[in-house]
Image 1 (cartoon, rainbow, N blue to C red):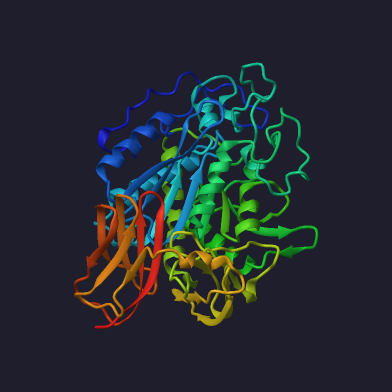
Image 2 (spheres, rainbow, N blue to C red):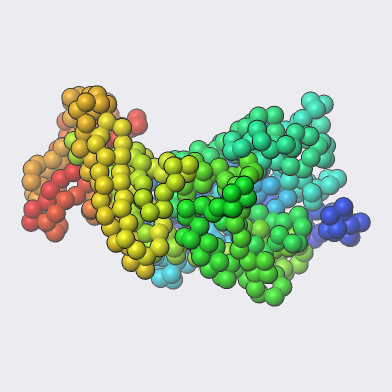
Length: 520
């Protein structure tokens, strides 16, 4: 799995099996060397950044509480350094420090996408048409403790918060369970004992590790989110949990009929370490715990899953690699669904300025006022909503604009495009900034030989792109350093007649968009 010789080879396991722990699992002196440790992951990300600069992008989304370790997020896509109006998928691992099977699965997936791009149509299609985000290690401090080989290393699931302030990090008294620290029904959750492995922390969002994950999800608005875990008891292993079930009233979520089949199909793709069949399959997650999956669905409506990989935390020998490969291959099903739907997608923009809007999109047939709001992402005003085949009524609304309702039929496969151009509401006063000097405009109508114009108050790097009605880029008009003032960019070539979107991005933090009509 470790390609190119860029990562050091660790020595074999130190020592023999120790006494079994309270949960009945065997504990070793340290993880099997087939698991990726932090140094290896970091070195491999360095190597991939050099080898695949066009399709590999990484960024530090934050730092851990105690050791101030960087938390890396990786995006795989064509033009990876630039956001594009493509469906996003987010997969992350090691929220709990001792659940490294997910890290191995992510590293397997990254290797597949990078090394087979341009060679395998299957992976090339994903890279060219999706933005795939991965966080290999979220709880970096806890992960490091596990790989240190210290006492109780195999059981350390929490963060590294020093609960008693003695300057030491002692199992099980220190740390916070990062999957009980989300601000969802946090007050109702009773686990306040710092020595508990499921201690919820001193207050919601106390752990920066989950704050950065929350912010990444809110920024990118993925179609699908997967949280990879491994179980502490075999009975919940090899299982995928979807959201959700409410035991207080016996009700499932309005999206249950959409999410459950995805969960089942994903489980059928992911072979296990033993029989090759996911022994426990798929089940609804209860909506009672302050964990990520519940927070994400409640506050965004995003399709969120939690996967318990295998039947235990740690393995030895070739099983380590086979679990990574079997799980990783199966997880590509999420990319297939993001590519093919079925569902409805589109762009919500202002009919007044043409700018993309942060809008709420409601599909009335599968709507609950207790879920969401389901918002467009901020870069392009784009939304994606997984649905079943059928007829739907969709409403888009945004501050300062009049809501608009349209109908759409969703087939059994593919995305149905439904764009919204919302009329400004003069009574609201929100669109007052429209009277400011224009940042972006074009010849009307626009055709080959015409020009696009923009205004900059100071020099900076500019990206100017032309998108079609579905949000796909059809031309990069400019990408480079530009001086201050009004600039004209000639437009060459030929396009089918129709409506297109201009998108301008410039330093520092300038964004503008506008609709143009191309006549050929």
